[in-house]
Image (tube, rainbow, N blue to C red):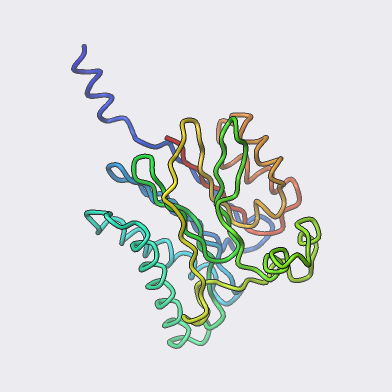
Length: 252
């Protein structure tokens, strides 16, 4: 009996994860997400393609596909920050190469946010205006990323409030994204952070956080919804989201 129990514990997944995405009110879903688990590590990413008919869906897909392949190939993640940074640059180069090879793709790009976790330590990556959060039963919801956007720059400068930013005409204008010139891309990588007991990590495209407040997101998480990712997406849609909508999460 003990041997069976020990075997079951050995085979128990280290992480519980889920993700959900819909096109929402748009004809094409340009969002992509990745959840890859191996041994004692997990890579979770959300990419929100930009460019409309300029193939934003291709850009987000190539982004997560590249990271998926790289994550499976690497044997020892001794330097997670370098792994995330180097492969973000490689994806950016792929997208820019496509711009020159095919004019139909010249306006496409993608955001990228998410995290790489090893056991209880994780690193967060962000490019653009998708977001990654951490939620804890006693601490609530906290944002782990800062948007690369015109309105965020104005907020930082003290010329705009968070509430004013929600309706600002430049609220969707980004200052960094995969697909723009290499010397202008800003890649934020932070960590390591320690995953606390009961803590949940989440990554969203702006179809979620532009239409649900932090309080609403926290309440949905705290409600222990059976399908958390799907519930967040559906609640964002019900709140009037006009964008593609993607939510992913992880807990240990």
